[in-house]
Length: 290
Image (cartoon, rainbow, N blue to C red; front, side, top):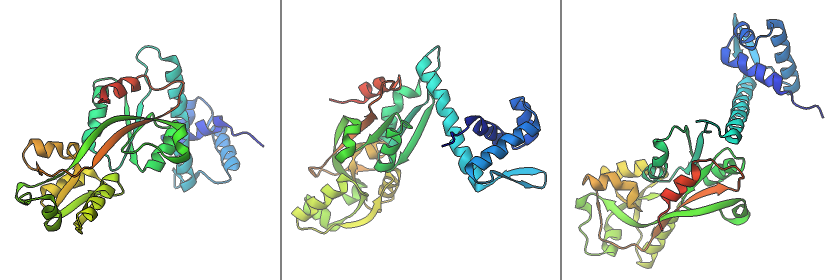
């Protein structure tokens, strides 16, 4: 099978970023005709045109935009490889952190705070557990922050370090907390729950034990939205206090005096690597709360 020619890809990338064949040829110190030939050979290899001419301008096709995305990642990864292995001077690769979309932003900031005073570039990703673990496995991320460790066959590919464990409470406006007991609260009020989480599962199990069918007004996968909806009085937020930390400190919300018996754990998940990011060990140590 014919090997892929990365010289062709580099020439294509320069033309795509410059948007002009003449400027790209000057930057690459090659003739315009030679550069054009390199692009044609790459198009032949891929089986699709990468550019189309619109008047005097070159515009990328859909395949061209896809190819550019891959090209950028390929050559940026090569630059990071050199920086990682050299570890010379102030050179440090970007720190790539993934986090569940449902994870508290306050918790993310707390984890990243030691890195904010350093010179390292931060690349932050959010998404589902499956997509983030795929990126971690492919070494496109240095760490994933989650509320669950990997399970099943994927667990052996990763290291999950528990950073913290926090009780889940009921948080809302003061005028919605005047109830004699937890069963009365669950019967009378409406609630905001994190979607697809252990917190939701635990809350619904609690309600079933108390023979109550709670009114759920929103399943939310964005913790910032949970805070806003609770502040507006739409319902009571069932989350760890860290999610609504700012609102509690400013007196916009209060925590109800009800014990739910639900906890949420926070994990940092890493892949087994010979060359982990040099800043990662410090972040893990400072975030860990025994």
